[in-house]
Length: 250
Image 1 (tube, rainbow, N blue to C red):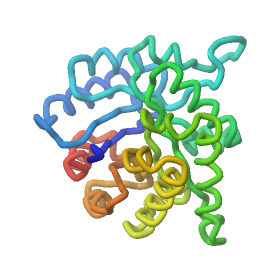
Image 2: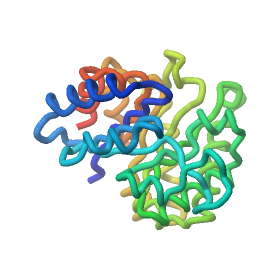
Image 3: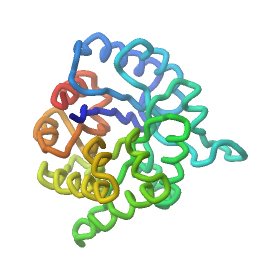
Image 4: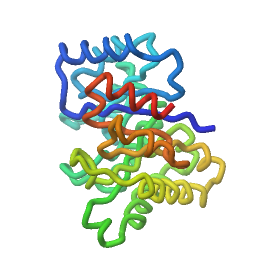
């Protein structure tokens, strides 16, 4: 049975004081066994400090992005080896924030997935469509293209130690979210796409939903058979809200 994951993406939020307060509250109220794995992804500058605060807790630290290259003259970039060195366990790949800002290609995202996988980080591969694409009926076409780039470069076995997150771009930070049925439709498509290459890997791959998930809608979304938790944005900055989402997943 797939164990759900709830991952908090802090985006460009936080300070040393705010981070310490949030982690303190999360750890103090963390249930003995929530029935789901928990990850937090702070901005790069806070990764090492947050990692130290999370040491010996059930909450795993993750990064928001990674460079596709192992080292070299890439000013401002962070390699998978560096993330591993400061204690990261997870890393988001292809999130729409950097993806749209820097116009990442599907092939670059696949290379980032491979780089993370090579250093034993758990990649959280983000796929999704913009509103115009959904309205044009191109959701499956775009999600298939994004997923296939990783499957072709890395093979389905790489997903045995990876996670997929469906994030409709039109639902990120907008207050809108896919209905549970819309999310389930795309999640089932993702699983079927992986199953076409390896049914065992497909059955085990955890597929998260991301897009304005809150405590109020989490249980309904997570009740869908192919939704294995969530990639949480703004709600992950509030301890009570984030823990309520974690409880819904478990």
